Image 1 (cartoon, one colour):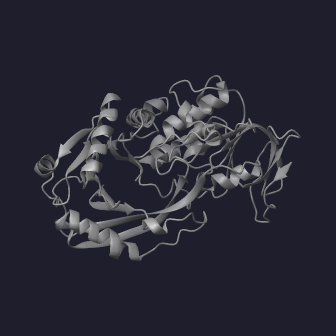
Image 2: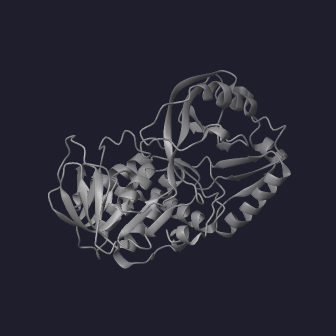
Image 3: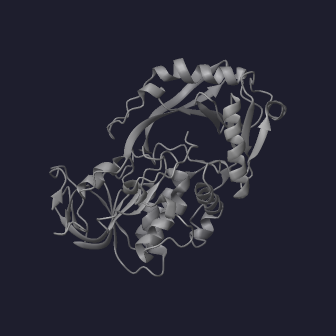
Length: 414
């Protein structure tokens, strides 16, 4: 059985082999994380092919990320995943075998500040703080008076409480991780090609992918296929006859601006009840938002057209209302990126398909992908090697919950 659109006539790079133990569809943050974790594992002696349709990575979620990291999640599993990410980032050179070429990477720990404008939301923040504290996160629940004392520049007339964690929350130079994962995976023997998987051929029983077909026409036999194609994940899954992957591209907007009257210190990543968030970004500031709630449909993965009205009618007014000192701003840059949005429960989808057993998911991160890539990449490599997760229990993220109708809901989605 073969699924997929016809191969394009555009030129593409052919891989050096005609069979690989692992074929990874997508070479951005997740494809490269998984490839690197596999190639550095002494128990793995196989071959890896990473197929990336656009090696400039210009239109990937990786290229459009804001590189944020937080532990303020509603589930202990997501908290532990981000705690490992913080440890990994702060010790990145050590994880790269103390290679002197590898730069140090730091977390700018401004923290996330979730603002609640009603008692119901405040109660939810208090419950979340208990979960986070029980998992070792440094989250504290703050009254309006405490917020005002620590951050006097906020206008807080509508705010009743907040949660803030100043420990290992903020942002980091994620591009460094990606570049070195990709570079080191190749140095260890992974093959990267500029090409595109356009079809997959299953065995007669439909229980495994026997081969993938590339845009350049080659048919590559494989032992395992990994779906690391971000917002294109559902398209990739359909090539294996899998029609129920609940992942779709959703637009998210980012704005970099300068303030005529900048704040004296760092601005926490502040999440307004409206959904507009803002933080320090070097000498400037970075803000972001989703489209209007009634205008957040799935989009084509090639659609990066901006809604330029959002800045004037939604983002800037929200910034001025919350921080009166931001009454005079200059927009420096803006872009639209994509969440690989899991419509089922907003959580990552990992592990094998329940019927096509050698088809492995690393999908649906819903905006959390960059910060989760160290742990999720390691876990995916473990599953490929051992058929289980070893370092962290990532069982709740397994794909099988989808057909079983058991959502593992993450409510802390920005």
